[in-house]
Length: 354
Picture (cartoon, rainbow, N blue to C red):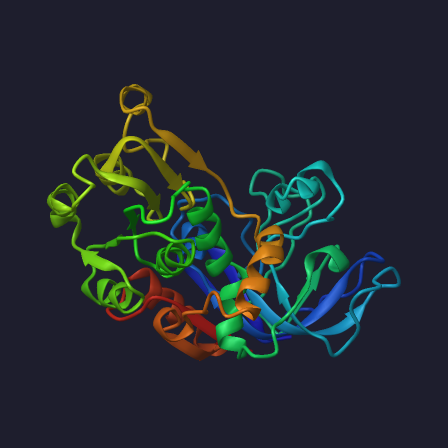
């Protein structure tokens, strides 16, 4: 099959000779990929900030069609159009039962293999024509018929992740909420905060075109240099925002998030953390009586409560504003990674079409 392979730091190759994945376990499904997202977290291994196994197909955001199923799969059949959440999950272990499917005892992350154990299995990702999905009955979700494949790709990671971050920010109706970092997850967090009843939403990012997109989604957009004064001048928020969602993953963004929070506020950290340093100290958090929450979004669990809201019209998928580069051919994958890593102006999210 055709696909991309992460061969080393900043080395993505387009290959036409990859072996097709096959059914290995009764609960496996083989999915024909219709769309595969390029996510900001794909840059962590690409840029060498996260150790992974090289030689593996990357990509953890997939909309596709079931091509084959193992003998134990009961809920899906070939031809079903589905979403593939970025972690597989069994649906039955303690973590899954508690709504933490991202920490499933038996789950894996698409497109990753442990760098420190070359004998451990690596689950190939979705930036290829086909992908194997273990634990298919509990992992896969039928794609909403009303959504295009390009819009639906946001349901495999970015929108549920932004929603999870907003839920964990503990905002009350009418609260002032800041979102620091307006990439694809941050923009989706703006949408989620609005749907969950936030009053004033501040979208903070140094990149002007990202701020414009946040404004179209209903946020007041701010450059980081102006954010502190802006929060201090808001009626009822003189001591800071009630909640901040940190979606950038850098110590400066975390330090700004701390500065924007009022005493007793909540910081919801949703960005992948690859630094050994954090933007403020435990002592500073203690002195401000902050609640700080970290963690990978359990996308499969979140979809159970997110999809009904979409069906009722309580939430919309911001595909036009987030997916800036749809319909990218896999053969352009190496260049697309390079452009994305270079933070090309106007680029927020790319989606591959095999």
